[in-house]
View 1 (spheres, rainbow, N blue to C red):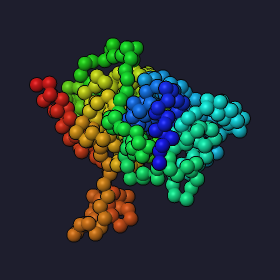
View 2 (cartoon, helix red, strand yellow):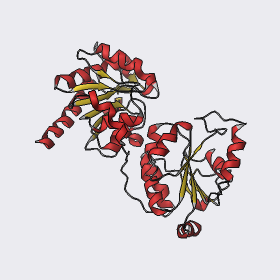
View 3 (cartoon, rainbow, N blue to C red):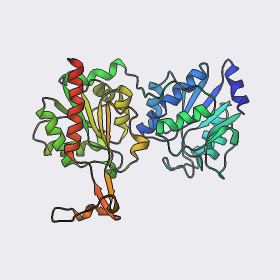
View 4 (cartoon, one colour):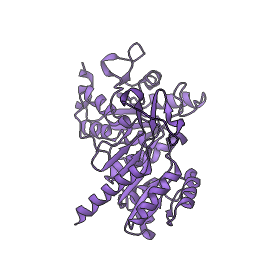
Length: 362
């Protein structure tokens, strides 16, 4: 079925385009195991990554897997970047001039993105598809694996295309210049990252403050992190805390943030890109899911990464359910009870992971 793809492996060099026009760090990092497999299968290929402008630094850092960057101009129906009727024709002329041998659609289920991928003019198109929706060639398009963790969605595509896998671990290369941020940070610290791209994915600042003070009481310096637009969150969080944290929100590049994490004893965060960064660096973490799929986005290593999400109990799941003056009626939804993640549960996981560190040191 994939005879043409096997033929590409015999070429001394070939040109591969990857469509991953999503801007979030988590979206980028979750492709790394697939990129690693692709590079191992095509060691001499020139691999071009098509993504928003914010992904340029990702391509530069992962230059052992990726060779070129093409800025995604937007395309109708692919909503992350507003489409530009002026930039798109120019982009397509440039892309088609690359004479790609293979274009991989690793964006989504392909409903819209497969037509964009086909316009790149590659000799072979491959990727994901939904039944009864357009795809350039069904032999090279995998039915979209809905019930897989994000990392494994892309690895399933590699398997489908006959590309041997090289493990499912994330990675993030560090560079010497990344470590300047550590000059004034104590040796024993825990990072707390209260932000997330969407407000509905953020755990409450009050709860973060309770956890942060418990960590400080255990003898660790608390370091607050975030991007520049989240500085208001970290400032509010610091004001709620009894201990004095170090607030680095908006003061670190991505590389510096990674270096900071690499030396941390632990990270406590929402479900956001920094959780995947900790996963890539093998730094212990407690990740709080408020409004996202824990199955899809939680780190795969359950030993050093603890993922917590709200629970929901149906009325029929318990023999007796009493509503009294202490019950928050706002937590009764759809014939059951919604139980959010509480600070005490997070603190238990934090203590367990920090004790693991102490045991390892001993």
